Length: 124
Image 1 (cartoon, rainbow, N blue to C red):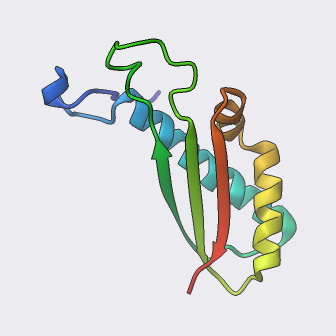
Image 2 (tube, rainbow, N blue to C red):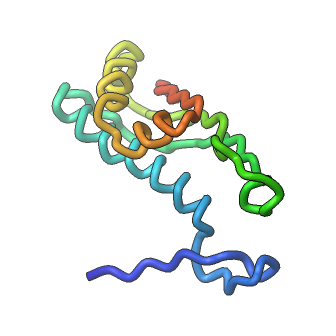
């Protein structure tokens, strides 16, 4: 019952009406980390407060440019989950450990060979 637009920028032949497939993949990782992180926090009784997630991604574009086949298109991804919260850093670390067990998209990236690092940070 939803319509989703995945597109490419105009300069790559698209209409720029939505994220590219690779941007959508990264968005899915961030979104899954957010959703599962909140579920894990609730189960642990941890209030995450205000959450923002930053992503730093290494992307090997040779595959999408059709230059050569790439086994691991995203060799490294680092997410930083910033939480403005009264929770302790130890509690956030536990939320992160639990989230890594259940985030399906993170598991997909890791299984594909991506070196995935997710840092849960008590922000000020």
